[in-house]
Every structure is written in C-alpha cells, then in structure tokens.
Length: 193
View 1 (cartoon, rainbow, N blue to C red):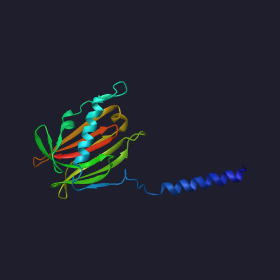
View 2: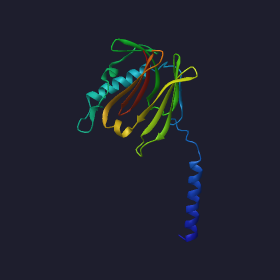
View 3: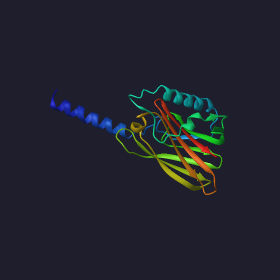
View 4: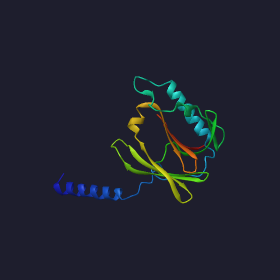
C-alpha cells in the first residue's frame, strides 16, 4: 500500500470517527425515563423478586457471595398488593418504579406529591461505575437530594444486592429508595410510608 493511500485511509477514519462522536446517543439505556405511575408493573416486580430469591438459593458461592453486606433481606419478601401498594413486614407503602431489569441512569418519577428527578453526574470508573444524583421535589421546591453510586463491578461480586436509602422529609413523610441488583438486572423502587 502506498504512503498516499495509507494517509487517505487514516484521514478518512479520523473524519468518520469525528462524525460519529458528534452524534447523540439515543440508546434506550441512556435516554431519560419518565414514569408517572407503577401501572402494569406488578407482574414484573413479582417476577424480579422471585428471581432474586431463586438466585440466592442457587448462588455458586465459590464464585460469588450470596448477599451483599448491609443488604436488607426483608425487601426480597415484600408483597406487591396492586399497582400502588406494597407490603413489607406488615407495613403498607405506596410505591413508584424508577426502573426494572434494565434501569436508566436518568429519569423522572411521580409519587403522590413528590417528584423525583435523577441523572448521571459522571462515569466514575473505567468499568462502568456511575455517580447518579437524585433530587426530591415537593411542588417546585427541592426538599432533599442524595447521590447513589452504581458500580457494576462491586454489585456483580454478589448474587443479590439490596441497598436502601431512607429519607425523612421536613413534613415527617418517609421515603425509601430501594436499589436491588441481580445477575440479570436491577429493580429501583421508591416507597412512601
């Protein structure tokens, strides 16, 4: 191959790469999710919980630990009563699904008077770890916020991981964010006591 041909090939590849880099990513995994209600998701939540319990029972402990430290196993036994209510240890919660199976790192959900917005702040690791900021609104006012670190490499060290974040708001309402992870996907829920 002549030097001129090689130079033309390299320049063509650079131009093509630059054009591709300028195109926005429209994959469903990176587009914001907007969830207004949990309607129709009862079956998916129940299937996810059943699969998580099955993963715990069949976990190959030579490769992974069954349950991540600090996981609250009670959430795996919650009962989805309908499209708006979940029961955990005899206590009823209203809920909204923030994501199921293949979650999005940005989105919006409404649960009664509260709107939750979340977005990916930055990629924190070369293996796909994400820093995700959550903001809770009551009306137009931000009433609380927090950061969740989604690090697949750490999560995949366990057959099941159940992380929760409880927030008591100034008016006394208690919100619980649940982040569940299994080998096949994730379930993110917002519970309101």
